[in-house]
Image (cartoon, rainbow, N blue to C red; front, side, top):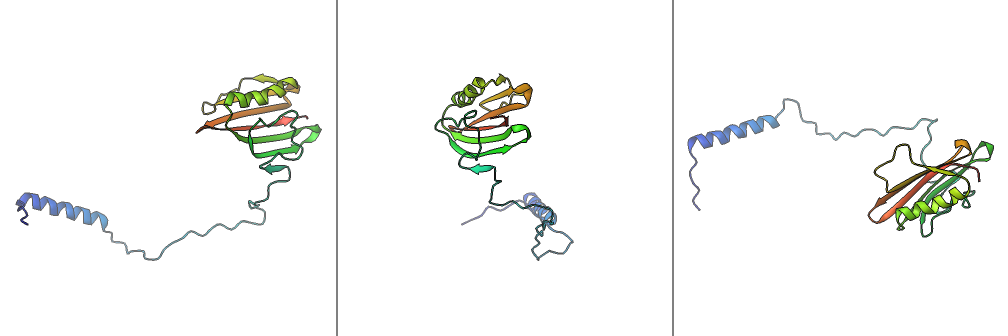
Length: 169
């Protein structure tokens, strides 16, 4: 095979670029051939480590003991991801519920809305609507001492309903 001959200026430019490239890669500092790793921090005696054991008032894959299903039912056909029901002073219960469902967002919100309204809660629009949510609701009762906030995320044909609040069952 016959390669074409390069002209002097093109060859000089190629050598100049090669020199710039090599000098950009060179350093006067010695090479570090020893691998470095950052040591993992060691927890102090006062720090709690995460465990596989949930808090006693939390349940994964089912309803937590004491969850007020008569007031906040699990929407039909939903898969419970996690829930909690923590008793508070004054007879209230702090609740949270996360479920996954293929039911549409409006139907999921309606399943939560109906029993809350029947129990005397008032629905009001969220103070700052979140545009990333497919649906959301805010419910209050007893002058605001009881409340339930609901958000529904719609992604890839699946909906995740998350709610939290404080209620008196």
